[in-house]
Image 1 (cartoon, rainbow, N blue to C red):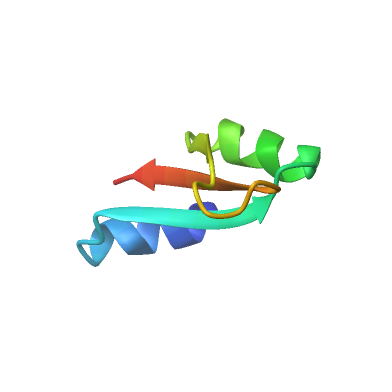
Image 2: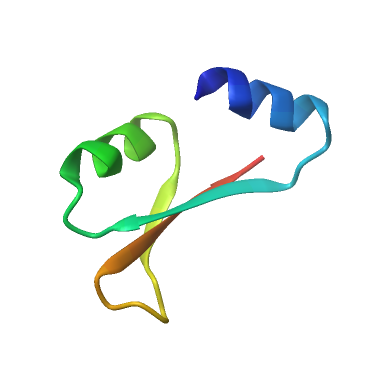
Length: 54
């Protein structure tokens, strides 16, 4: 994942996001450790959006 973040920055991406089940604790922990913000998905009550501004 760190390789993807580095490549995205080098290629002028503005952000990276992932949509995941809100019950997926390991993914939430990974996203948090990489600096992602986690928010509830406004369209799917059982999902969250992990967002990293680059």
